[in-house]
Image 1 (tube, rainbow, N blue to C red):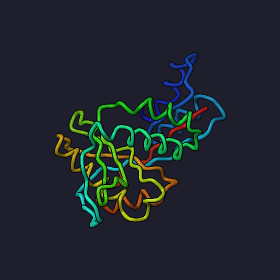
Image 2 (tube, rainbow, N blue to C red):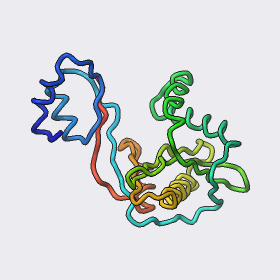
Image 3 (cartoon, rainbow, N blue to C red):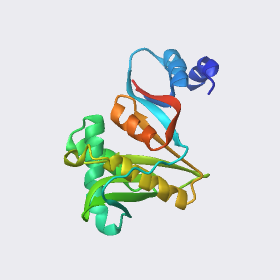
Length: 196
């Protein structure tokens, strides 16, 4: 939807229950002002695309997750959802389970055989693979593991057939944005998730 079309789109959708929208910031702003008052932005996101991968020099190694890692990945996915959205464990479990079984590759970064970070990536569709989530438990942060596992899952995505690797980062988290740019991701556009 071009921003100029927002009035016509809002009019065409009148009477439907729409309580959340996502898109580039200019489109979200154009539509939400036509739709109704109130609401709030849930996330301000930046879409990145990988240009030239710069693999960081971090202790440890990557490995593809196996079915034996399912419980660990599920637990980390729940922790990721709880931390990202400030959810209770029960609500985080529901959020994680809603997306846990999407078609994806999962890569773990491990040090001395112990997993310390994880990243998922969608199976390429139309030549594009999207990275996410990326999660490092608090006790393993500030060692570069998130950058290392993101680089590793990006390599997996290319090997799986992706011509383009993308990800989104919360603009409220300067650390993750810096990490992604440091390994070769470049900003494409800013996005907004808005809910009434």
